[in-house]
Amino acid sequence: MWRLKKRQKAFSSYHFFSDYLFTFAAIMIKMYKYVFPAILILTLAACGNNDQNAGNETVEDNNNPAPPAIAYNIVKVYPHDTSSYTEGLVWYNNEMYESAGNYKESRLFKNDLATGKTTKSVKLPDDFFGEGIAILNNKIYQLTYRENKVLVYDLKTFQKIKEMQWPHEGWGMTTDGTHLLISTGSSNIYFVNPDDFKIVKMIGVTDNYGPVGSINELELVNNVLYANIWQTQYIYKIDPESGRVLGKMDLTGLLAKSGIAYNPALYDNTTDNVLNGIAYDSVKNSLYITGKKWPATFEVKLN
Image 1 (cartoon, one colour):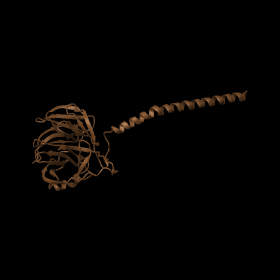
Image 2 (cartoon, helix red, strand yellow):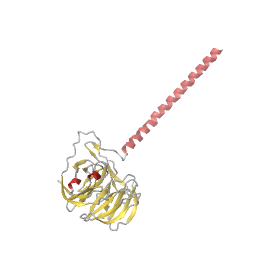
Image 3 (cartoon, one colour):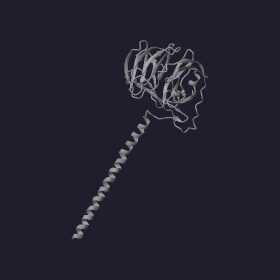
Image 4 (cartoon, one colour):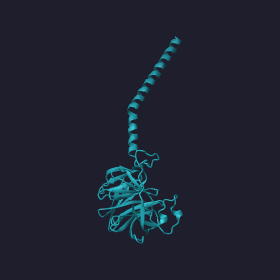
């Protein structure tokens, strides 16, 4: 009798364990069937929608040729306000407009190119970090860095008209005459409706190494984009339809060619006072180029 009970107990335990394994296996099969695909889809979606794409890959795509170098000539050098942490630069109706960044220092201002002196200015709230600007339909649009705000001003008076929402970081901005084109520090450039700031389309910037990240200040010149690449000495020429890099301008050592006295230690690779700021003068067919807290603005012509 004792053996029988022991057997029955063992038999019962065996069935309990088998049932447990069967139930566990069934659960795992269901999880694999439903949960795993869902996780995979979410992962792929997250990768596809990641605006902060690092870009700047190091493995070259041999099927895509390297962008050619763009030569340039310095036409003239003008003084620049060294207190301006330049984030945006626009030449409009023979006047220079600039956006300066940094918290507690951000402002929108207009300056005299010949002297570098400010002629009109408006300060941003201390908790706003000013970024790229564009002028469209007699309004100035100014991005902010991480505040998800776009500030809209009257062109003549600099009076703020309204604030608009922007879901990404704000870096550079320009216009094609219809849309505002915005960079976010990733490899993406967004075409945006200026009335409601809805995204119309997006392009991804690529070169022979793949996605190009850290795209900053933008300028549209004869239907071609020019962009500063953050913390580099390069300006990239970009096809606004495909996002393909068409050329690269190496501006290494530009500041040393200014003929203006400055402290090199304030502009070396350990600081953020880097090349940033592109404006186009359609009358002269020249670019104006400067940098963050640089003492000079350069007028250059492309070869």
